[in-house]
Amino acid sequence: MLTVKNIVKSYARPGIGWGRKRQIILQGISFTIRPGECVGLIGESGSGKSTLSRLVLGLEQPDSGEITIENQGVRSWRSSHPGQMSVVFQDYTTSANPRFTVEEIIAEPLVMLNKPARAVVTALLDKVGLPAALLGRYPHELSGGQLQRVCLARAISTRPRFLVLDEALSSLDVSVQAQILELLKGLKAELNLTYLFIAHDLQTITNLCNRVLFLYQGMIVEELASSRLFEAKNDYARQLLASVIPFGGCPAGRSSHSGEMGQ
Ligand SMILES: Nc1ncnc2c1ncn2[C@@H]1O[C@H](COP(=O)(O)OP(=O)(O)OP(=O)(O)O)[C@@H](O)[C@H]1O
Image (cartoon, rainbow, N blue to C red; front, side, top):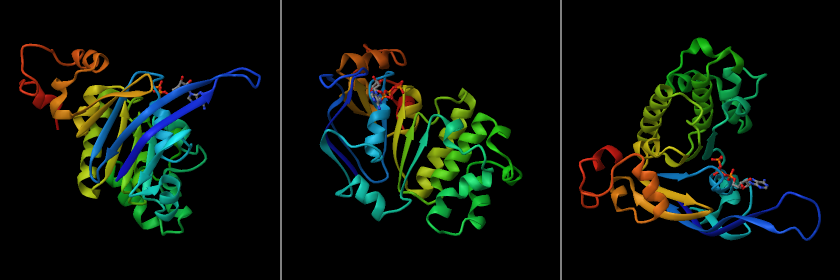
């Protein structure tokens, strides 16, 4: 569905003057996501995860390289497939208009596409496990977990085929994270969604994703199926994995732990 080919992205370094060098944020990034697949992207803070998500969403352009969806440039695919790509960001407090009610927040993308919204909003709220009684509430009257569910309901309101989740669970406490992960799994099966799931927590990623990309200093240094994490060769990937699963002793992919980390 998504093909990312040899992407390079840089930003001007802070400061004044023409001679400023640019800071390379992403280099040589290539990967694909097949329809219905969930691919996780993990990396430490500042490794370029959100930059990559903005490029995939077509919000920014790469310096070089190409990002296509179904063989079409991202921006042109988005305009020819309105509502078929959605995103949920980490910061749900700024993602939702504080002057909008829950009903208006969820209906927003549908209204923009001139589609009837009223009838589906309650069903969407129910789909993300929230009661209809919340429809008239404002964001400040909701808990963080409730508001992030509202953002998720908004993201799926147009029945997208491709969903980018950029640290969408990171600000939530562990029990709410677990509930929303279950919800995402259910939605993936029900709507046959394709996910790019960005997180800094490996266990969250492997819980949901078929495949994991390890981003380190702007490069993808390892790419593995969630069920074959023991095959990691890169030091950074092994370090991350070592914090969750013990290495050594078990042949790659044969440990009793591999089931826990896989799908
Ligand atoms: N618009 C911008 N202009 C200049 N530099 C930027 C811009 N956006 C991001 N950067 C820089 O790019 C680097 C990568 O940032 P990015 O937000 O993509 O990292 P990240 O992996 O998502 O980090 P985190 O996990 O902390 O959110 C950082 O050094 C950041 O300062």
